Length: 447
Image (cartoon, rainbow, N blue to C red; front, side, top):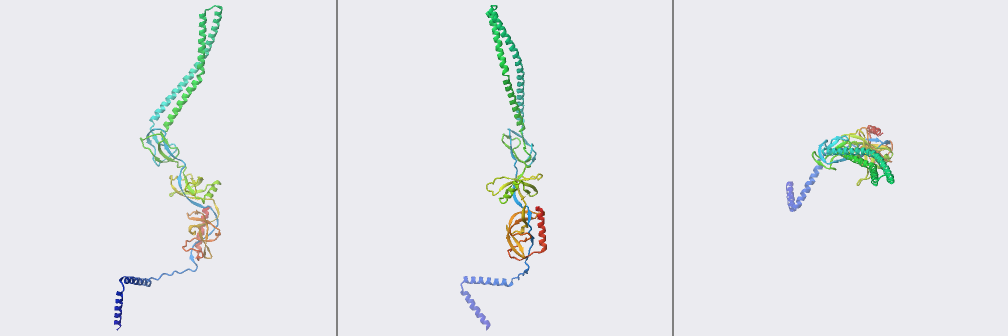
């Protein structure tokens, strides 16, 4: 009887199902399958592990805050520059005879970089030397002639005096009727001729200084031409104006160059500087140090090696689009010169500051948040980041200060994702002592 009852019930359900529209039957089927799946997942899911909660709090590490006089370090970025970079040009017109160096070579001051053909300059020098020899010879001849003119003048004056005396004598004889008019006229003509010769000789002697000046000027002009030709011959070799590294050679052997043609480029690698941007937040301290005659020490990291130096000066002008003032760092002697234009990361040591606390990087949350541990509970405070420093072991420490910090306070050094004020924590003694010892090393490095 029960069997017949279930059979009747099944027939009724079957007929009822087929009376429902197809779309509704599909939706009901989907809902039913989803419900059964959810029930199965919940029923057969594994039991989660139960984590035992420590009543004493989350284990963390900490550090004891110690007020110290430390020198903050500022991380800067710069680029290698040089105040001496030259584009060397040809000063004479000549074909290129030879290239003495290649791009990338390091040369000393005065080294030949590009040699030009010297044939035309050598011929010009020979002509200038010949003109100089001729001008000097003309001057010497003029000096000898001047001595002769002065000697002739003395004799001419004597002859003129004798002619005047002779003419006076003939006048007396003519007045006495002892000589004829013709004889008197001959004596007067001779006197006049001697007078004219005397005037001419005196003029010749008087003009000697002017003629000597002209001859000396000709000699000076010939000497200048000779020196110019010699300089042109020397300029046939394009030389390095300072020690440095050749960056470009712009000509080839046989190429005819004109005056003003760029043939090579070189920069002085003995006076390399690093241009760095000093942020406005650090600018007052840097200016105060430079005004006091101090030059902040700088450690430059070139990747494969490091070099020491110091901030020498500030540019004194803010470039367009920049928020700070550029400073120039001079590298110490003996530092391997880096490549021009190379990007550099620097650490600049500022002036010592009192009452700073050195904390590990993981002790600072965000930019300015630290947590104190007071009776096993966290208490968050805001601090001011003054800078950073590096210990002897190479560990980075952040230097902070703030009214909420006190000497000897316990500071959280573990990064917790749920760090909030009031969270209960526990600090093992061995971990705390280990961190304190590390901070002690940082203090030694700073001093």
